[in-house]
Image (cartoon, rainbow, N blue to C red; front, side, top):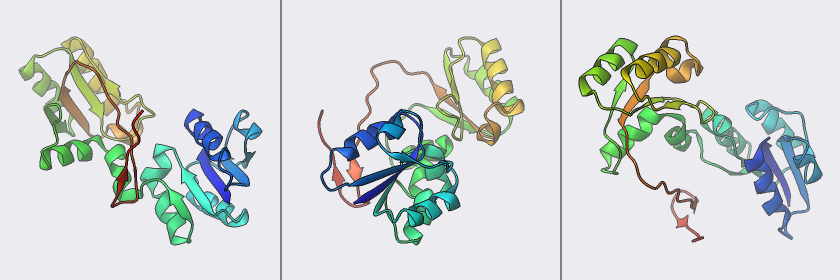
Length: 210
């Protein structure tokens, strides 16, 4: 089996290391990859968000299976494009990836289906955010940029001045670009954090305990 992995970070390298253990796999490619990954896979200079480029590369190397790991290409619909060309692909399609790509969507989804989540409110105007935070007067509070921000789109102000500065950076200075057009203001919760990972084909879930 010929496998293509999309991405260039530690997540992708971990996937490649594991894929390499399978006796069903005889070739692994990665795009764009990195220096470390090049020891375990053949790297190609195709950007992780270049959907057309990745589809063309999959076709060129005759990939039997493609694993798309980074958030941005998943949210942009790379899996949809690969599936449309007949490639078996690991990763959520665009409709499913919005759960990661939009905090507003995911919070509203949790509310709709009764999934426990911190109390929150959504805003598209910075003045309204500040007014709400002033009224609540509960610190620390949590402010999240709606879209993807490379894991940096959340701030936890301890004071009103910190909150005002943070809202300005996210919504006016656009330090996260369009991801900050909307924000979620959330109550601050303390306690242990747990991530539960599972594999699914859209109907069946397989979870392996640690």
